[in-house]
Length: 63
Image (cartoon, rainbow, N blue to C red):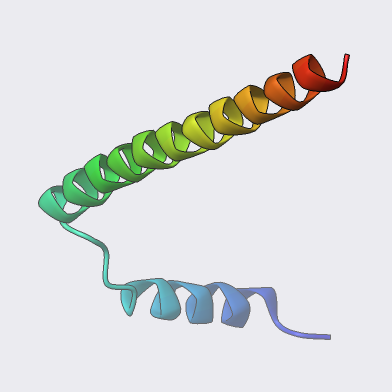
């Protein structure tokens, strides 16, 4: 069985090696995520609108 104290020491050692992002990096990546989400949502909105228009046209001709 592993020693819990040794485990906690190793965890603390590994956490000390983590390079945390700066506040500026977090802010920039958050902004980029929102921009990409907006661009993606607009793209899929336009695709949906095009498909809806196409299907309405086809069904209007056939029916």
